[in-house]
Amino acid sequence: MNTASSRLRVFSLTSTLKNLGIQVNIHSAEHENILDFKTRFDELGTRDVLVVQKRVTPEILSYVDRAISNGAFIIYDIDDFGSALWWWTSPRLCYEMLLRANLITTDTIGRAKWLLQSHKRLNVQVWHNSVDYSPTEPSKLEPITRSPLRVLWFGTSSNLHMFTKYVKALGSLPDIQIVICGGSEELVNSLCPELKFEVIPWSLTNFLHILQSCDLSCLMHDGSLYDRQKSNHKMITSICWGVPAIVSDTPEYARIAREAGVDDAIFSNAEELLKALQKYRSSSSRKAYLEKAQNLIWEKYSPDKIARKFVEIVEEGIQSGNKSIYSASQNQSNTQISKISSYLSYILWRFMVEEHRLQFLQDRIKESGKNLLTKIRRFLRIKLEDMNLAGTLKSRLKTPPS
Image (cartoon, rainbow, N blue to C red; front, side, top):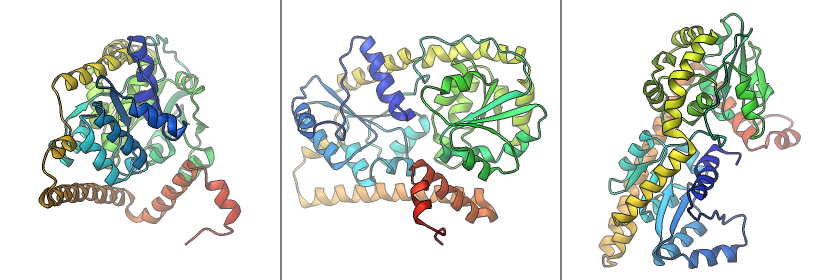
């Protein structure tokens, strides 16, 4: 529940599907008795749907093969790519899972294009994220006038690099309090020592209180190739819980802003960001924003609406009799030529993966400029913090490694 991916695409979905009268079970190969887990997969029948959410291990792949032999409809839900994806699986296992799935679901149009580019025979459908933190209706907060204006950025510490390039501009505004939810105070201060922030650790129980204590949220995905394909769930969550969002001119954020009629909340540089913040400084302008955007967004992205969309996608996939690439290849004779063809397909896929990885590095180097070494040190420090290893390493290392 502490990661948006599983919270939205497993737990929130499961809860809503159950409300729709659909039987759903969640199983984890790592947290259950392994024999019980194998038995469940052996018992999968022809009417069952098996969804694998992002993580793939050799054990999970073997269970998928059991389910396929029992006639299950296989869905692979993949809402990351690049280094964030390889944290959960390897390129080889990901490729094998893509071949076995009757249907691949993802959360953004950009990621769908990436998947189709990786293998044109895949059946890919976009299933967007819903509003987060299990709302039952839009929150009708009444915007208030207060001093200073409270502006919130929230996210994981690994995404702070996108925010920090705007902090000097934000700090130039009079009568403003920048609130950061995510990352430690020590980390934030080391990235932006010249400015003072209110830094609050994120937790599932305290986030909504933090969000609704602020007047605006300031969200951006204008970083690397991978960053620009991220989902809009933070934006729609902020708006539906009653806090207008000022957002970067990146695919998903800009699409939502234009759909909701708040184009003037989009920025592509620091000057435009400041202009948007000044426009929405007054409580009356924020009220008008919510009146335009909130109901439209709720209509499309409420948990109920997104769950029904998921069911619709699955039913269409089952009715169309979609076959996986793996099933189709099983029907061919197991000749040496078909084995070579399969291996060459994998090699081509890996070339595409590496091309994107190089693009990612190139994007980061461009961002870094002369401060590349500083950026690398910050990146490593963020990763250490995320893995809760910083304290352990500090006690073991008297001096940092070269």
